[in-house]
Length: 186
Image (cartoon, rainbow, N blue to C red; front, side, top):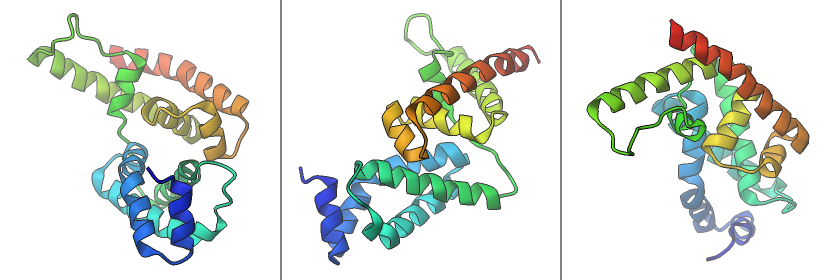
């Protein structure tokens, strides 16, 4: 498999097929990130498209000091932030996050109609709790639990030290606990 960085070099040299290959490789992950930050398919589609437009325009600025995917995630995060600032509604959806936090468990691994309904309700409660977190904590939650990135990668994407990533993640988890308790008792 040809590494991303080689495709980037070809794209910078004007090979449009190379940039198409880059898009094919990363489109699903960028869409997933955008969807989880923005909360709906339409906004995620727009953000994904805008991410690749911005990436194409800025491709020459990629300096090969980190993985290309890390650089692309940063472009995607910036694009999503711009959409969030412009949007009147800040609703976000992070349904996969619940499974990573192991909030939702079925007794024997088999899902029943009741457990599916309960899971959906718990996902809504979790989303409501996450919506109340500060933006920087939401970012770390999505990148770590949903995108399964390592602290090092998150630090590069966010442009902060790894210790800051760890701190934000711990703070986010601590902030989620009482919010979830409050929501589950209402």
